Image (tube, helix red, strand yellow):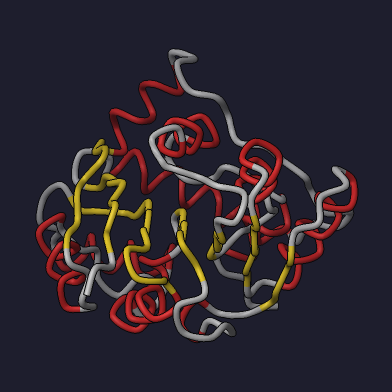
Length: 244
């Protein structure tokens, strides 16, 4: 069985795996306007942690989308357990199964960098309504990576290229977003220090009954890479507007 990074996350049912976790998500959403009729797409919803939080706290229409069957199963179990009527769909952010101009907000947490970025951004733009908002949390390089370092990133995460903040901004522009703001930035090293000092909450775990031994190896490689490239890799929270 050939496992990848997302298989390992799914087997352990890691919710809030993105930097800053659910705490960071809450802080971002506090500054967003929600109405009862607001339609939100949690693109790459994972175990459904963010979708659940939005549905419970903002009482709006939430649609959760993920490609991984194990994540879909765990999100479905969460929504049932918490008695939430969230529409859950299995599908890719590279081909979002909804019509044009369906959503007021699209939220993608540590998803887009693992996909074909230009295609995914165009899909987000397509399904957003006019004056819609895209919020993404994505891996961003702090410094240039050597050929060997980029190869390590590709081996662990399957990412062909890690973009700089400038390259991300250009990508949003190419997808026709009218403006992009960087809401937060941090290196991996700084984030790990926050976690070690208990300033940040740890991810949530919903482990599967059976976890393939390879999953532990992949997550160990992830941790090793974080320590090795902690100053060169980081993340940003981007907020982009559709206003055409």
